[in-house]
Length: 249
Image (cartoon, rainbow, N blue to C red):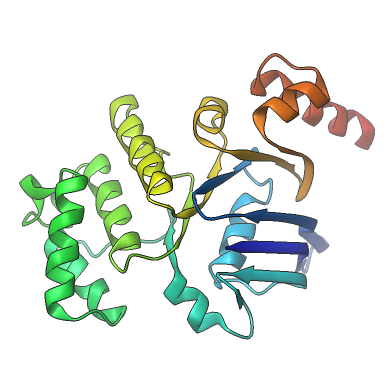
């Protein structure tokens, strides 16, 4: 469903010059699988996900989403994905129902199909109690549920979640994680970005540890434990990142 080969993204800054936000990374993610990006802020996670979502163009490398090239077939890629990002704003004056109707129409769904899908999603995400409340009156957790609903209204085969639990309380974060597990069980291909070790451990089928735009390691959790002799992901993460920092000094 997702195949990335030798992806590099370079930005140019007047003061700092050439900045390699992502450098020569490769990975793939299949149907019914969650591929996790684990890294500190500024590691390159969001840049990679924005490339997958066609928001940014890669400098070099091959990126295929659902069989489509992200540059040459961007429109078809967008039809294939649901993208959840903290920077994707909601319309304060809309209600959740109006929001989902709007995005359903944008994605070309018939009115009857939107109503059917919306009813199912609101039931699954427990949104019925606030479906007619304006967005600016919703709690952070309610807004996050609405953002998820907006991302999946067109039933895309690929879901991209960029730190979906940031700012949520523990209970709401668990609810969101449980929904993502359900999406995987329903056969979705999911990319999941986080800097929370426990989320990556519990949720991801494969994990890539990314630092300064490079993969320090990737694989299943048992593979990472065996290859880097760590008892848990946190130990492995700090071992790899610390070694990288020491090498750069």
